[in-house]
Length: 248
Image (cartoon, rainbow, N blue to C red; front, side, top):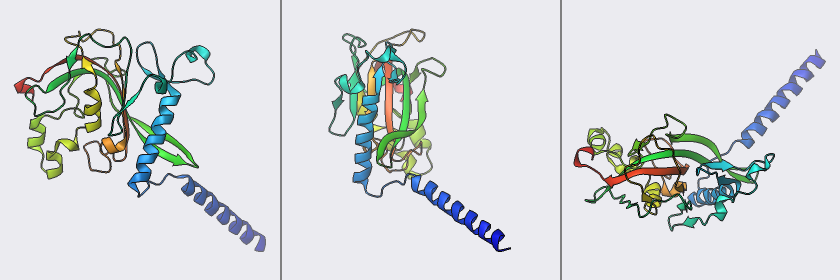
């Protein structure tokens, strides 16, 4: 009986130790917003060092075993521009319209721009695991490129219609900031849109916008329930024009 008891006790201690190790490995969101912002900044820089743009402008991770990507430049070597908000954008050479259409993201402006876009929008959480800070927990916010392959007009994170705001039953959902990502709008203003590109035309992505959580939803309630998330947008604006009155 003593041996059986000792085996049970040893097993219980082992289980507790394993459980504690698992719990210690789990990432805990920092309470200090400055720590969160630091994680975002470091993880985004690492992301830019580990990824490149292929011949169609898609973001791809460098392979450790395939040498075909050795001649591509890192995102961090493609003249990324960092705005005061922390938003980073990369304009891809040879993929811009000339002259193209300026994009006005202020929805209340008389010339506010409606966009039709091919886009891959992913979200990440910047985590610190044993001192390794990375963009992890990847998910798809919106994806027309790997989805149905058709451009989409005014994604909700860019512009939410007035009818949606008017129909909301709680105050927070009546605010544009509940849906729209300000950092994406800010980055998009640095690009120009094409005009009347056919829906079936092959895409040639114009570049990248990376939005840290502080320039997205931060820790606020939002439509997508993505607090503390960073966002990476890879896109082409197929058509940019003043938003018609009946689509506001």
